[in-house]
Length: 338
Image (cartoon, rainbow, N blue to C red; front, side):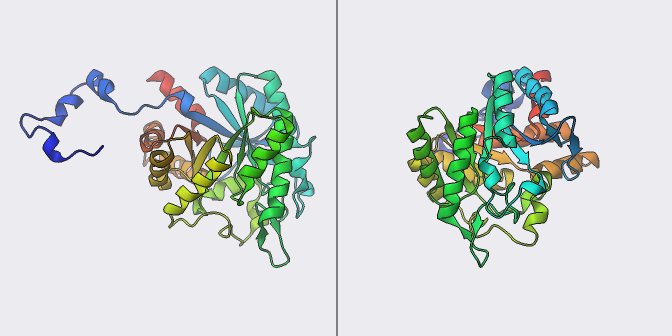
């Protein structure tokens, strides 16, 4: 419901600063708030034991073997962070043009999911449904002879991947590939097998963004992708109405939750999606956003803790119900001390 300026008292009867005078009044009238329950923590997991490798382009972020990931999961439980999102670092010897390792029931992600759910059943676990960590070419799908990403054959593999993850006990599968029809195919396959409780968080509006660079370094797909791009399946950054079509299709196909990615450069999309559909809406504060804030803070140009909380609050103000962020543990600590 819109309001015109005539609806409000004119100065001096109306003084908006009255409601900013002191902390208790500001707290009383605050429209949006950030809590630890709004956070999803993305982590990078790799094979082996005792392995901890820093991601150079993401200061403070590491690739961890399962034994070192378990204490991080415990930190999430203690801090009240409800969900951990897993992203695999796959050995180069297992990568193939068809990405078959993605649906290996004895593969890295199924084993990590099983271990996490056995140790921390109260912690939600989310898995990425996409082929780029598993393909030798770094694309999210299968290629034809010309190098074009094939839609329907890719969806068939994604369904196998999602079923494998669900069988391992994951709570939320999150298709991030942007193939047409994959949400409906995955939902139908899950239902047919009786996996009625497996939730789908669809990367519904995922843009072909330049902000993903550090993530590709982290999962080891940057070198495989080379000078190629993902513009034939990820969305054009200039489009906004298209995002609503994509979200609407995914909801109709059975998505429980939808996501916009990247985050802060696309807060207008988050707002439009929430206003249009009123469904659980999430956003991803991606690796490039994280790297920028970290670099500026390390140079003394920004107050690290202040910009972390302000940036995350911006997602809530835009309409996001939750945020995937590499700052999750930092934010939880800061929120506990406020």
